[in-house]
Length: 440
View 1 (cartoon, rainbow, N blue to C red):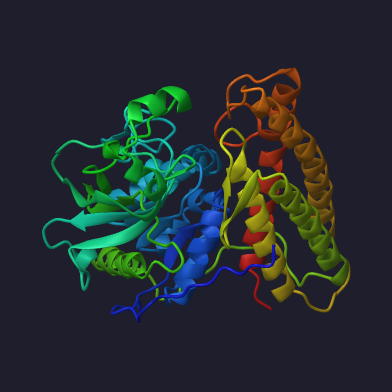
View 2 (cartoon, helix red, strand yellow):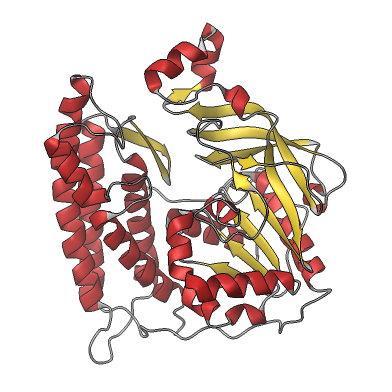
C-alpha cells in the first residue's frame, strides 16, 4: 500500500489552540490514535502521549484535558487497571475535562465494559444500527461552544459506532443529533446512496442480513453528549471529529478542546509544558531494525494484495479498507495501516547506533508473529471464500471446523480482537508509544 494519510481541509479553520498540552491516552487506539495524533499536529494542538500505566501513577495531575481516541473500550480498560480508572474519575471530579471519541466515548458509559463515569448506557445491540460508517450530518441545539463559527448542521464521519441510551438527566445534555445520512454513508456493506433510490424494504433485508439496517434507527438520536461530573465535564462523541480532511468536524474538535480547557482552568492549574513520562526503550533505531520493519511491511502488503486479488476488500481511503461481510476486515485494515505508520515513524527515528540496538529483539519478534499471522490468514481467507460460496459465512458464528479453529487462533472468539492478532497489536502499540516519545 503506497498511500499517505493527509489532511486536506477545504478552508482555513477559524479557531486555534494555544493552551497547555492536553493528555492523550495512547493505549489500544492503533489506527484511531494515529489519525488523531496526525490531525492534532496538523491543527497545531499541543499534546503529550500517555500510557495507561502513566495515568495509574498519577500523571493526569499535570493536565487539564484528557483525550481518549477510538478503539475497543475493553482493551483500553484492561491497560488502565483499577488504579487508572480511579485516577480518571478523580481527575474529572476535581475539575478536569474528558473528551472521548467512539470507543473512548463508550468506555465512559455505565454499561460494561466501561469506567462507569456517567449514568448512561450503550443502546442495546438489538435496538441500534450496529454497522454504520461514513458521513452523516448532525445538528446542534442552543449555543454550545462546540458550534462556534459553524453552521447549524455539519457533516461528520462515524466508523461503526455504538449509540447512547440517553435520557434527560440533570447535568447532561446533547451537543448534537444525527439528522440525515451523508453522501458516503454505508450500512454494513451497502452504500446507502445506491440502495435508497430503489425503495428498499428494510425488514426483508434485515431478515437476510440478521442485523438492523434501517438508518431511521440512527437519525434523531444524540451523536455527542456533554455530562457534568463533580467540578469537571465530559464530552462524549461517537462521530470521529478527528477524521482527516473533515474540515467542519476538525473545527468542532478545536472548539471543544478550547472550551474544555477553559472550563477546567477554573479548577485546575498546570504548567504550560508538563514533564513527559519516562521511556523504557531509548536511543535511535539501527539499520538492522529498520530492515526488519521494512520486511514486516512487505509481509503485510503481500497479504493485502492477496485480499484485493480475491475481492475480499479494497481501499476506501488511505487509512481504511472496505471489506466483504463475514470476515475480520477491520483487523486486516488496522494491521496494514498501523504497520505503514510504524515504518514511517520508525524511519524518522533512525540514527547512528551506540552499542547494542535495544529495538532489535522486540522488532524481530514482531516480524515473526506477523509472518505467522499473515501465512495463516491467507489460508483462513480461502476457507472463508469457500464457505461463503456454500452460503455459510458469518463473522462470529460457527462456520465449520477448519474456519472456526483458524479464527480462534488468529482472532479469538469475541468481537474485540484476541488470539495472535491481540499479541501483535499489543506489541505494535508498545513500540509505537516508545517511538512517539523519542527525542534525540
